[in-house]
Each structure stands twice: as structure tokens, then as C-alpha cells.
Length: 144
Image (tube, rainbow, N blue to C red; front, side, top):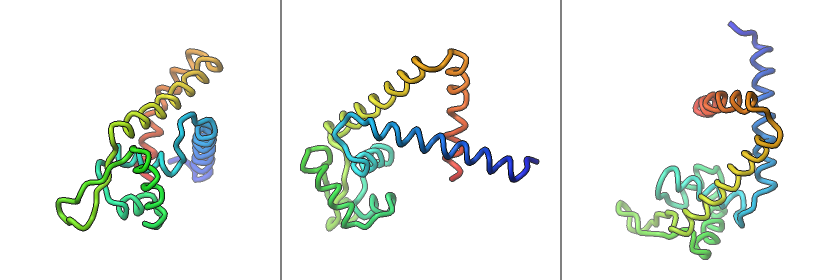
């Protein structure tokens, strides 16, 4: 069994690396989306239609704050609202075609940004090692 100190050292290194990667990709984001807007759109893309209160629970913010974010996305034609088939008083939000395209373009921008960093700064062997490690990071996320 690995020692607690070794696990904590590894966990710290992973947290630092992922935090820096996230921060740097956010800083250089090229699409006109705020972080909360991107989070809402990504959530709807992954999970399908949801209500404002459902999105607020996922993102751990108030429904009022989520309403402001959603309102901005709706006014730009990136989300649309339909009546909830189970509760007609409630609306369900989903991405419009324009929203899906913008989200895909933003993801493509980040992917290309990472690919450029890999191509310009890493050897083929290092790139292969990173590729092999990527599924392990996904597994870590599944257990958090």
C-alpha cells in the first residue's frame, strides 16, 4: 500500500497541474462567453434540457444568479425554453443550433490551443505519455 504522504504529494501535483491548465485556457478563451455561460451551455450539452433551478443546483448557485446567466444566453439566441411536459408552469432550457455551434467552436479553440502547446514544446515521446495518462485523469474525476 502506498504511504499517505506519497498519495498527498501526487494529489497535490495533479491538482496544481489541472488548476493551472484550466486557468490558462480560460485566460486565453477566444469566444465571447463568460465562465458561467460556458458552464451552463456545457451542462446542457452533456445532460440535455434542464430547468433554471436544476442548473443552479448543478452549479451550486442561486436560481436568481442562474436566471441572469440564462437570460443573457437566451437574449443572444444561444438557449431556448420549452414547457416542461411534466410541469407546465416550469420551463426547460436547451441549446439552440447557434448555441451548440458556439460551444463546439469554443471547445475546438481550446483543443487547438493545447495541441499547439504540445507541438511546440513537447517531444513525441512526451506527447504519447500525456495521451496515455489522459484516461487516468478522467477516472480521477469520476471518483470526486
